[in-house]
Figure (cartoon, rainbow, N blue to C red):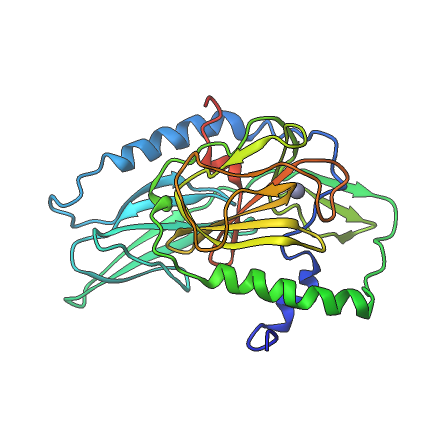
Length: 307
Ligand SMILES: [Zn+2]
């Protein structure tokens, strides 16, 4: 059945596995982000220009080395396996790789390449902390304890999301510079969190963009549709999950309509759905979340703010 190997921890606190986001309607600012972004994206362009074969003796990488950020790089010739901390990093046939840092990643991480000749290359990465938008609220957190009826409905939804994110479609979108799925007012930022009398609520797991109901949105990078929930999920509503390959995937929540179905291969810029307020949402918006393996990432760090 659907309950098979899914860790309980994923199911219970995970009532908000993709985290519905209807509460946040006020624009939040994160001024610390923007100046740093241009530099990071410039560095990413350099990575794209790295020689693919010539004397690849070192680990080379660039990206957004910050909480919720990512790196793209090339492993030395002869690399047999690569890992970031304890997490295995998939290696493409041409030696390129993608890895990323969770919202709550610690200040450093080690990237280690094991070579076929038994040697090891390692790089100590410094992961810059972020100044998350934390709001302290002097009210008690709403008591948990969802109803049994809700949990019954929720379990298979979470199982479907979990299973979709485990799929590896071989998509190559992880190599691309991402584009905005839709432009519009940003109504909620990744990572923001409320603390209720000292007790943290779950943080906002994606970027909310509110361009108006019915506005088409597009694939930010190439991928394969691994979940297309025409039948609304209780929190996410009409939900799309797109695999970009190498463990990186996007989820789009609250759509009013989906333009693709499971198994479809989509190209960057292709219309995939329309903005809505399905599921738990107080108004029409697109909630876009990005994950690499278990790490939750900040979509803004994948985008060129000038674009
Ligand atoms: Zn949201």
